[in-house]
Amino acid sequence: MNIIGPDALAFGVDDVAASRAYLTAFGLDPVDVDETGGLFEALDGTGIIIRARNDPRLPAPIATATMLRQTTYGCADQATVDSIADELSRDRQIKRLDDGAIEAADDQGFALKFQVTKRRELKLAGEKINAPGDAPQRGVNKIGAWQDMPAKPRTLSHVVCFVPDLRPAEAFYVGRLGFKITDRFNNAGPFLRPAGTQDHHTLFFIETPPYMQGCEHFAFHMGGPTEMMMAGSRFVKAGYQSFWGPGRHKFGSNWFWYFNSPLGCHVEYDADMDLHDDEWSPREAVASPETSQVFLFENVEKWAPMGGPPPGAKGDGH
Ligand SMILES: [Fe+2]
Image 1 (cartoon, rainbow, N blue to C red):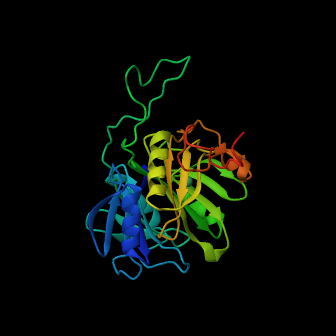
Image 2: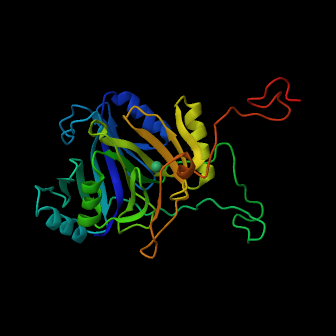
Image 3: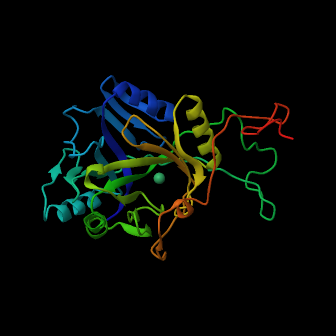
């Protein structure tokens, strides 16, 4: 099953205008967007679709409060989409769309769509660093950071879902769709990657009580940690609320910064995720503050030594 990863996530929201402002400020580009919503895409064409909660164009909601209504997976070719159709039609209804895509539900009731990926190939430089002991990556007279440097989400990276029962969730994605387990939090769930990508995870499950089933967060890859910090700092300045981060995860090694959103879930910038192939042996850990990140920062106001006591200092700092 040559599934590459999520092409799009569709949400049915309470406030289309607020969601539209949020996703635009996040750095996604509106495509065919009007007051009823539309697609907000990253540089490679992956993205987030928002509609009003009661919009009939969305698949039916599940029984919880989640606003996630459909996950669209991008596949390498039509043969992959057809083989998924053959596999899933053994035990469930599938719907074939005019363009060759198919729709079906997973074993938890999440609506899925499979299509030949709409991703555009990106030809962009990643972040480069100069480190003593290694050849310079960025080199002479090349500037590493500036205030208005570009920092746009490049591609939809992963989605994390609360599920009431891990076993059927894992069995469906591993057994029926060929996802691989890269690592596992024993008290939460597995990190999964489809066969068509080497990214550490495009999907992660957390087992929760049934009423919480839904999307916990989704994430977009940035061009590096500096872009992630720039985009997050701009998002804070635009008035959006940091939820967790910035920091760097242990499993996946990705830099992260999560924000609250009007989409009923958190939204993450991430950067520099580990890549894996079938030679990799999954690790296991108990999820905790210690295992969830190698370090965690706190975003504070800008400061300079000539500008009075440092942020958080008591007294005059002497
Ligand atoms: Fe994440």
